[in-house]
Length: 324
Ligand code: SF4
Image (cartoon, protein in one colour):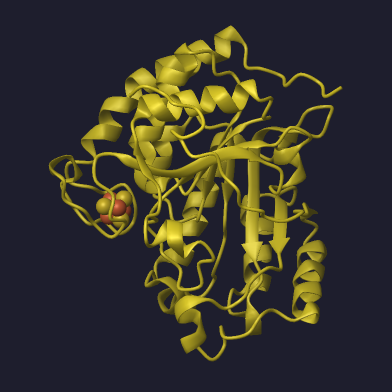
């Protein structure tokens, strides 16, 4: 019999509601000349303009589901309540989910619909709500959380991001998001420019991880090993050490915390434009992966493994009609 999820207390929920009341107006204001992410497009998204992420004044959701392929502290026995947002402000050339991130497969969803999806996932017993690729839709997520808290949402909230996040946007989430799960993808600006046209990625990610860690600290688990609060970093090993794994692990141990939990991931394989790059046009070898794991262990970081990422979904409206 699965144990009941620990829920936030009434006091914790009241604190989140107070924070949301303060932070929501500012979040929506940033949409009219959008500076939510480091692309700084300045698009007036309220008036239907789009920037790099191709998203206007409404989130597009690919689907939601209890996900059993996330890291064990998130998936537990009942799954991580994952909500996949379409489009992306980073746009890696090797993205395995190009249909969602680039082509924008999904359905427009109001904050009310997203809130109801959260409640459905909580009712299914999920250990947390896991917002995947949230950066460009942060204001809508905050509004949805506000509504969902009124509907009884009380499980931890996970911000599952590329790491291309501005301190100003992360500030909007302070005291509301419980668990940050950023990638740290590249150390070298040239690699970041080649892979995702974002030479500032390494600098942005370093700052972002410091802000996230200051907000939530190291990952804290309950007595069943389920994450309640803190930072969990993902790192995808890339061929020819394109990612700069050694420098990233050293940074985590030195500048974030030697107790940082890291998932070193092996599943890189070339897709899309990655085939056009000599280094990126092959998978990672077993020795490259083992070497990355050794490096992380040498720095004393806490390893978290991941069983895989099967992708099936509940569409927002097909299985659980919700009124907007
Ligand atoms: S969130 Fe989108 S529109 Fe806003 S700055 Fe980033 S890429 Fe541009």
